[in-house]
Image 1 (tube, rainbow, N blue to C red):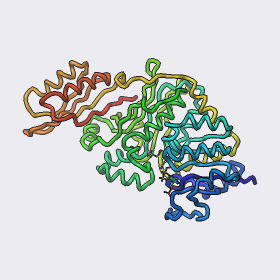
Image 2 (image 1 turned 90 degrees about the vertical axis):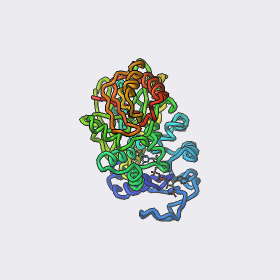
Image 3 (image 1 turned 30 degrees about the vertical axis):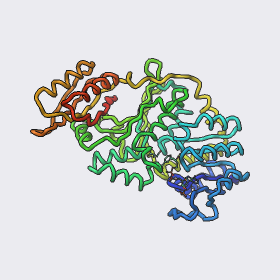
Length: 429
Ligand code: NAP
Ligand code: HSE
């Protein structure tokens, strides 16, 4: 049997999953890849940390050169996260003619071009299946299985941590903080969970999906981003009352020759399949002009699901399809599609406002909406004989630019305490 040595950068949540899979499925991996995979070295920050897994201490190192400069190591797996020093380590591995597998969406979304080009120049493979939606083979699907299509749109739940939090808040009345803590304990969250809860992680993943699907370079600044920290239990309740579930969604679609790309919480109809995607599960709806609608569903985060994607990438490299993805990733940037400005986006809206409980106030606000071309579907007021009342508006479909202008005027009204929340409603079919 052939033998191959790999080096791993990082032994945290994903690294632990990779280690377990390489050992548990050793026999299957040997048969499928034709290789006995030996882990040569694993880079960590602290070799003395208790990791709760049985990894021989002599495999651990705090010196990156032990992985990057070892000629016997043929594949480097980067699962440490962040841009610095991960980028330099990957570039050094590529210069040293090592194939690379990474799960690092932040790095790919911000520095991907340089890495793909370096891999192409050196003729090594650069695989990244785990970078989007954990164990779901979405990169492979777009890069290989759907290439006959013109992709028209993608709508997905692509962050496990926020989906876990929203699920717990919606169905178990858990607080945001308690649910986030559980997501961290389960290994779903990023090292800095701000990346999850403020929508950055989903934005990086959407940049990767958009680039591969629409064949264009994506500047992450062109993606509209909002997280879930402003979602309150009262918003979840109003959503339920109107037949919606709140999810953090990522959308890319071509509208009038431009790309609309956005990540934000949205109310989606409770009967839509995406509304039933709970806990750390992810799902991605793709519409191709030949295949029609399809949905990929599975675990979007965690040690074993993510490890599954990483180890499958290693096996793909060993099977000899070494340069296909590296080259196709570079050549996917064959178009130059401009981003569509957010004010051109069309949506329905939920707007929760605290107003002075006085005669004529509702009329005043409704008039402002009307002046800016926003048609009201329904309005509700809660709170009796208090200084301030909570008023909730559901609008018909309108332009984001119209809502922005109306909200500015409403904020300026002397009868309005504050705009408590604005949530888009995606009446997806
Ligand atoms: P993690 O639990 O924080 O683990 C990071 C590992 O990298 C740790 O072992 C750490 O060493 C090591 N490390 C970090 N910086 C280092 C440095 N400068 N020098 C040496 N070692 C360093 O992270 P994770 O959750 O496994 O995520 C890893 C990557 O996978 C990230 O890019 C993440 O976005 C991506 N990803 C994660 C998931 C998930 O479900 N968690 C899913 C898909 C993709 P110590 O252990 O000694 O501190
Ligand atoms: N923190 C990420 C998430 C990990 O929660 O989805 C998977 O990419």
